[in-house]
Each structure stands twice: as C-alpha cells, then as structure tokens.
Image (cartoon, rainbow, N blue to C red; front, side, top):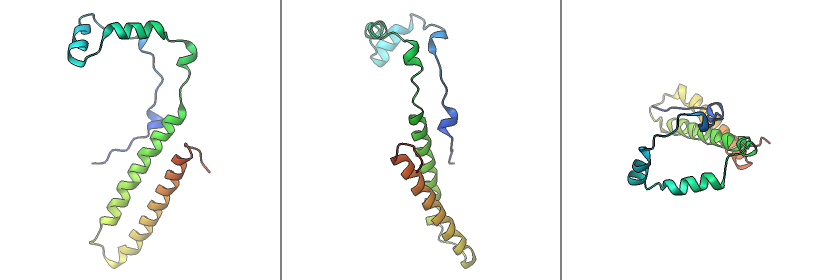
Length: 121
C-alpha cells in the first residue's frame, strides 16, 4: 500500500508550554533509558528561553521542500509501476507510454522546483 500525504497541509504551529508538565518521575526514565541529562536540558532552557520573535520564525520553505520530496517519491513509484508492466496488450501500450512520459515530465518538473528551493520557474 502506498500512502501519500501533503506535508504543506499537515504542518501546524504549536506551543508545548500550555501542555501538561512532565511528571518528575520521568526524569529518571529519560536519563536511564535514553541518556537524556535533565540538568543539561534545564541549562539549555535557561540559556535560550523562548521568545515571541523565535516562535514566529517558521520556515515555510522547509515544508514546501518536504512536500516536493513526497510528491517526487509518489511519481517515482508510479513510474516504477508503469515501467514494470510487461503484460500489456498492443492497445494499452500507447496509453502506457504516454502515461509514462507524462509521469517522467511531472517528476522532472518537481525535481527542478526542488532544486530551486521550492520556487517555480
């Protein structure tokens, strides 16, 4: 099964400070199971407090680039399927060749857009 999602439609701004605080019993678990040193985390939070300016610095370019990569991956899969169809009748061969050409062209267009940093020509 192939699942395709649009990253640009799934990106959401969020702020974890309004959530429930982590229970103190998790400190030992984080350190013992994952090697996360709570003292360092607390120091980083103290040294780099969240500010309104930083919170608003969302990079839509990253979301667009991820979206393009997922779309290219979907075209790669479609091309792979079209190239692998060896049991075609002569009637369907022309349609499949046109579909394959269109898929390759769309993939090339998306790759070009990705190489330009998400900017269209």
